[in-house]
Image (tube, rainbow, N blue to C red; front, side, top):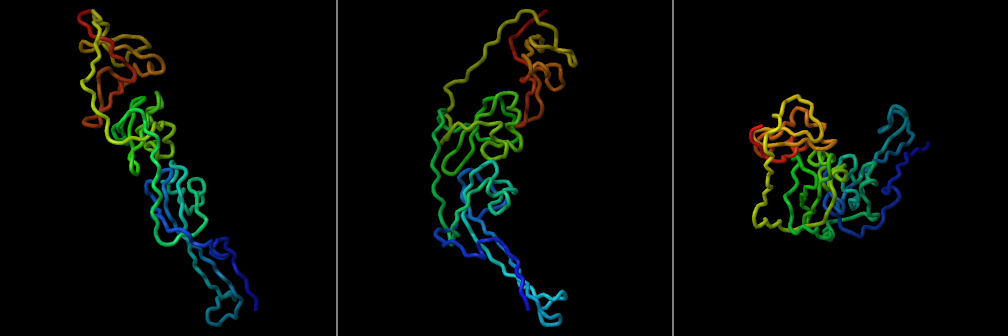
Length: 279
């Protein structure tokens, strides 16, 4: 008789480190996690032992071996180190890419534990919290938003043009999605809300005198060209925005959508410079 054992390199076979801490909340695949999030996860390992035997004996397989499978499990605490990846299914704490997003405590955990209170980052200079981020919204360059964390909110600023076009897209949610730092900058923490200004401010339009040519769909416009529409004068912006002045969807003063989903693409290509009358 001889015995052959499969080897599985897990702590379960060679002994665990002593459990010294309680377990944090269990990791949930698809949950929302950010840098500093603390979770626990359990890795289950199956070990199969094969022993030579006589075919026909109880438990002996047709190939002349008896197999016995042992299942072991180990639960450890993990802390998120890469907020952009920790919420993605490819970077679970017990997955093959775990080390790219999480750090693992060497000691196995038992029972429950309360995660340490995260320190609140330095407050941003704008006072209270700006409007909360909303995916799918079209954000202008330098727009600021807030994202709720535990005990505070974080403020982010949308990138300059043309990168700002990504700020509302899937995959760029500030502080969480994989590519967020390509479209947003972190400004600091906030609490409360921003107090409204005492009174609205208005832009004073210049009297341009006679009106330039009316805007024409399909006309070839270049940087600095002026057009009129409904008594207002618009000027084509400088390059690279000027390339949109002649494109469909950028007609001055128009909008697409309705309600909270209204977008005004023309503002990326044209500036209102005044009003006019006559020719």
